[in-house]
Image (cartoon, rainbow, N blue to C red; front, side, top):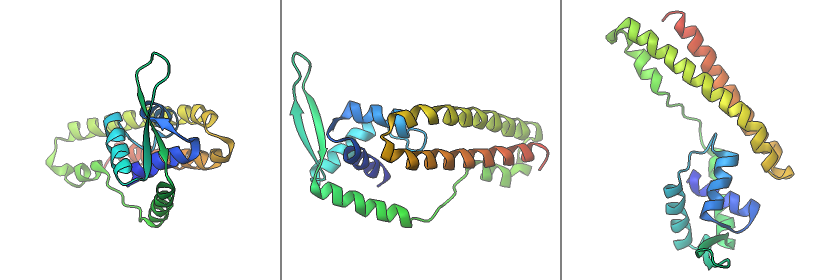
Length: 175
């Protein structure tokens, strides 16, 4: 559902795109909060095309290979707003893998346990730095009307990452 929402949203915002351009926009603008791989993108484009939410047309540019260009249809635009409403109403569910490890930490080697917590903290610090640096780069690529929303999303993720990082630092002090 979310992948199709992002695909339709990008087509709605930027107009017709071929798959590689959509993937480039995903990587440049939303990869920090929407993990979509190229094969997954094409899988969902095909599903959206079969449901007539996107139209696919072959396009040839000079001697270059033929490309399939995707456009959102009227039905696709309606479906985008249905997905938007569903996502607005969706309840936050946290599924944090480290919670299970901590819950059963007495079954692990204490040194290995704390080493894994430190490794998780270091990895999270790197992720936080990556998101913070990518934020400015991505905001430059997003049209002015979409920047406030994108900024809010980046801030949301940064706040969560910082909270998780603070929690890991406390955990390192001793469970």
